[in-house]
Amino acid sequence: MHKDYMEFGNKEGPLLVFIHGGGVGGWMWDKQITYFSEYHCLVPTLQGHGNRNNETSFSIHENALEIMELIEQKKEEKDVHIIGFSIGAQICLEIVSLAPNLIKTAVINSAVVIPMKYMIPFIPLTIKMTFPLIKNKTFAKAQAKQLYMDGAYFNKYYEESLKMNADALINVLKENMAYSLPENCSKSTARVLVTAGEKEKGLVKKSVRKIVETNEHFEFLFVPSIGHGFPVAKSDLFNQVLEDWVLHQKVHRL
Image (tube, rainbow, N blue to C red; front, side):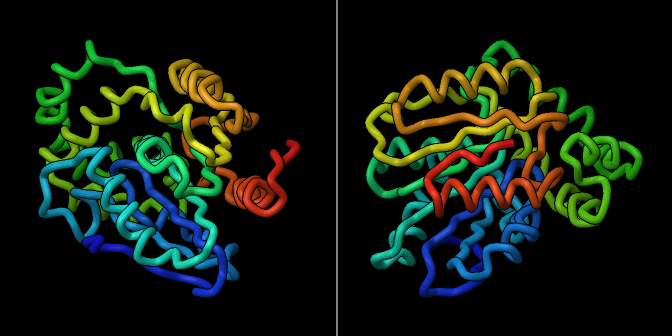
């Protein structure tokens, strides 16, 4: 049984599973949950986050297995759609590759699949040095701004970062930077929409193209004038893009 998740909406509707990013929580999907009230929405908490902040380990693979188990418990005969942001998007890719026929559609936001292995040895020292800064509100605001969480979400973001322990954060970053595209993605029958903001780092944009090349059912969408944080930065547009993909099987025209 998944250790911690929230459940919303109409339990008779199709299943939407929202997977949050690293260092934030399921609350990042609040605007989506409100909008998709006719769907059966699940919002799992990832390892080491929120109510699971006593956990120090974090694995993309293990999170994917946990969420797949949750989906199996809840899906019955329903279509399953998964949506992930950042490391949550990497977890979506892992699910799509581990269970090629489980998911009908996925929307993957800002996933990196080009490993930065040269950075990994520096993560523990960097986190240990900067970790005390997390408690500093000015530093936290600057970090939150990168994710468009410096407004109404800031207090939740700040609380979340205070709860998280350094070892969990180190493992999140290591997993994120070591992740490469699973080979089995090419075998998936899921229709996958891969999105990124046009102002994102080159690595994210290169990753979008790399993911889409692997499977004829995969398409991409670059969102003008935003960086890392499409679901929060432009939640109304994000909801339309997601709805068009899930309901009408087409890419929303920007």
